Image (cartoon, rainbow, N blue to C red; front, side, top):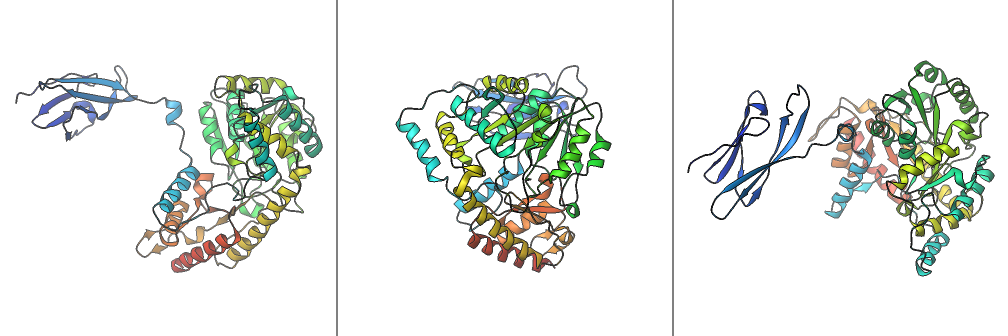
Length: 480
């Protein structure tokens, strides 16, 4: 059969020989290799090709091959390259590990899943009934973009009574989860080249949100010996004219640390000396807190209301992760900017979820008895894990003061050889080992900016946690 060639933008040639289509060309690399695949009516191959007149940038191209009945072949080129902004963003490791563990369970592997940040409790019945009634009563249409007035008024009341900060409904925007509230805030206030200050360990999405806004994440390390709390002196030394946002999360994911009011006041004094610096205060875990620790809203501190974007929601405290409901409270011009993004992005949150949110805020101060029962269970689980891992040599622990995570230093196990597995080099390989040998899914600390640690979610029953600890201990003892 006679061969033919087609010149593409990369000057590569494509030849149909026998039952295979082969691609070769100088732009595929210094030593290009032939790539073959079976011929069928429609086939495609992704090739990295250089753009014309470009020394460094490349694009992904699909070569689509169509063979007609009379053996005539047509070849078209489609550019499927992605934007640099998207390529700069890393996928969420917590989501990836949770999905992997779920797939293993579905395949019949008895994996204990302690990776996801999701309460194991059902949504309180009063809240669920409010959502059901909304459906039955036909409350299933679009709401105002910023959220229903009823819900925004309830949020204002909650913030005044529980947090000591005053807002009006036009200073609230309700979104499809607190994650959306945060990313919209970052997009609204950051310009290309701005710096976003993020204490580590951090929630996995903060740096990626900064990159989506073409801003630069600046990571400030903390120490387990300091309960993973930001050192104000370090903060001050890292601030520049490019510093635009400081993101604080208290209680913290992944460490469970709670910022004392005195430390927040020191940070506020530093922030006040930098006119461009704003603060996102992520307070999604505020009700999951263990006495004597107390929660302080950053916006309640002197001079901080004007420059703080407070984010909260319903997923964690009210066990409403699937309802997707969060909110942002801030000065009106920031809220208007976030609302503008949301109006062109998702529009308002679910009408049904918003009715449920009103019911949640009606449960009483800090969620009333329904939330206090869950917090009591979380505390019992925390105490069990702290005691259990405290018995293991080489494990360092900072006792969580809130949230439902334990972030333990396991770096003493790095460098050891695991029989049938290989060398434990870092937090990721240790988590892979624990998943492989112990069948427990955890999240490596490098996802949160601290490779010495791993994160254990205790949003699971005490019985499940007891079984998980037994497996983890058995696997770690083998290493030692």
